[in-house]
Image (cartoon, rainbow, N blue to C red):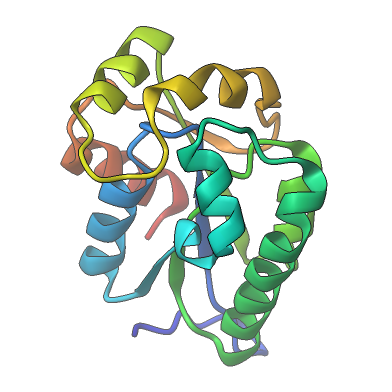
Length: 172
């Protein structure tokens, strides 16, 4: 894992790739982390079995369902920042309050992967073996509070182009 240097203290950059299901968070996140030699984590891996089952059944999660999940992710990010570890986290982070929970320090950068509903639907229709299906897209779009203070990246392009844009914009 590559550690970024800063003046006066050890620091890291943690990139939270956010967006609705099908926006390419995992694909772009894995590629970005690999290019930088950083750790990659998919926030989906931190959901409880009960939450996964709800989503698999087409039932949107509530804020109460998400609270322990967000707490675990906050701890993870806090650890990365404390140890100076560069990392990429793929996380829906649909609401402003969720992003505030994850924004533990200035080293945490939010990148919003944004696409059209049509493109997102097409991607989810093609997805195999994931608990989040096309039928959950509308509830995610309804819950989405688009960030005002994030790097916004259009997902129309290839994963490599998306990663190049992120790296250029964040100077990584």
